[in-house]
Length: 152
Image (cartoon, rainbow, N blue to C red):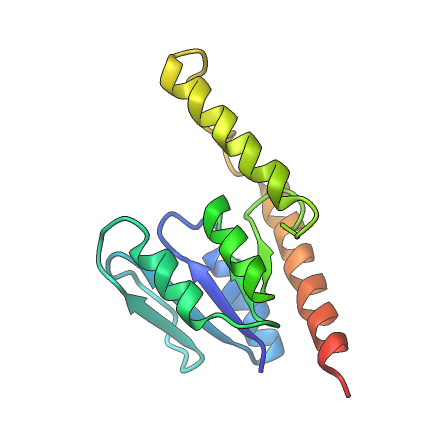
């Protein structure tokens, strides 16, 4: 059955995920370095994996499967999940796919180098209402696409 995994530390769309998952009756697992408040819902689970580099990422990769959805802004984690056959959604922008993950990894590397050299500072623009709306639409479309794919 379709399962949604959320790289939950600093995820701005958790409430949207809860709402869509409840509408479809889907299980959600949030993976985080520390405890956070979650809805009182038996279909929402929080896995606290502790701090450390890639601990949450590794947990997600060990549990996600083809046909699941992973929500993350972490491009290397997205690449690993795509290799498993999972659908990957960032918080903003188009879904990450086998066709665009290479460019996303290259852009990430370039931006990292520019920040380290002092050529660029700051982060992404603030998350806006239209970003939430676009995310909701992408999540809904992804769930329906996976359900059609899994239909006998």
